[in-house]
Amino acid sequence: MNLADPSERILARAAWRLIPVMGLMYVVSFLDRVNISFAALTMNHDLGFSDTVFGLGSGIFFLGYFLFEVPSNLMLEKVGARAWMCRIMVTWGLLSMACAFVQGPLSFYVLRFLLGAAEAGLYPGMILYMTYWFPQATRARFIALFLAAVPLASVIGAPISGWLLGFEGALHGWQWLLLLEGVPSVLLGTLVLWLLPDRPATASWLSAPEKEILQARLAAEPPGALHGFFQMLADKRIWIFIIPDFSIVIGLYGLGLWMPQIIKGLGFSNLETGFLVVLPYALAMAGMVLVGLSSDKRGERVFHIAGSALAAALGLLGAALFHSPALVIGSFCLASIGIYAALAVFWTLPTAILRGLAAAGGLALLNSFANLGGFFGPYLMGWLKQLTGDYSLGLEVLAGMETLAAVTVILIGRAFFRRAY
Image (cartoon, rainbow, N blue to C red; front, side, top):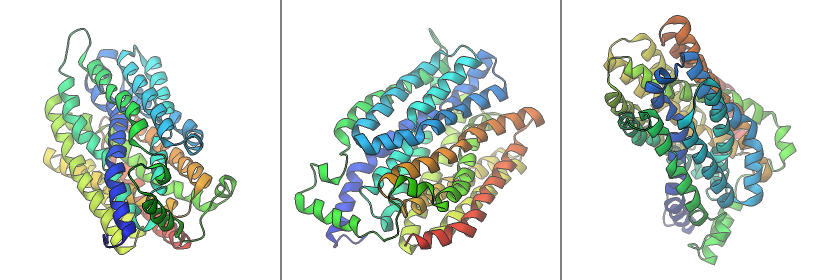
């Protein structure tokens, strides 16, 4: 970044102001959608849930997410980021806390579905929000910094979740976990009203000349973008982008929601599992930011995505084939780095060709279909585990999906990315 350029200095200040808040929002978001993976270490026994029941309940979150994603993002474009993000965070925080009181499979399924419906729009809304502030040429690094919140959620949440499972008293440990980890979402959702300006024009910390400079930089984006909602629906690029995004995401959630149980099955306690899960996510945070910086520096997207996805496939395959705890955890580290790095750079492709209502609807449409991987990944892992007795086949399927992501990005993504410019 050339800080001698006034627009670059403004972008740097905007990043310092916005990315930490957005990242914290996504930390609590991701924590509340995946803390069920830790709760399962004791909840499944207490409630008599089979692997299939847990896998379905974990994944059904994404069906609610899928159905309400596009309407939610269109509402954000209409009413503004602050008000809509506040609504999203407060409702999902309350529903996450309610999950502490599930009684059986039906209530588990219903609350997980409603949690997904409440949270729908947060991720594509934040990606859309970034297009209001950051030009395409700088976007990979800023998306990577924002998405670093996902592994950070596990770095923070894994040891805390492992510790909370030891609480017993009026409630079981898993109930304390779900109840207490929902509170930050409600509190932060309220604070968002003061922390996030809707657009650069309403940012009190930018002067009028600075707003003009930033708007001029954003207006100088490459031509050829889609602006209308129905224009976006008619463009085949949006639909084809679903393939690699779905393939990456199915690995993210298929691994993430089962990793604690896999690691515990290697012979570790709940507390030890909580700390060991931190390692893959800590390395993923560093890896995805470095890959994002490299992608922006070289102006290259396709092979950064494909190479990361292939690294993820190798890691998942290694976890399926190795039996040593050290090698399995090392494989999880490689898989996590690859998955998160691929996902961060991937989002530079659709944001290069979408603006306005097309961006609001298109990013949500793409993310909603892709996040069906969040349903199929956990469910598939649970079903195959119950069918075969171990996790190997499920991990091999996830490795195949990451390979598919790499191949499709190479075949179609590069040509489309060039067209965006």
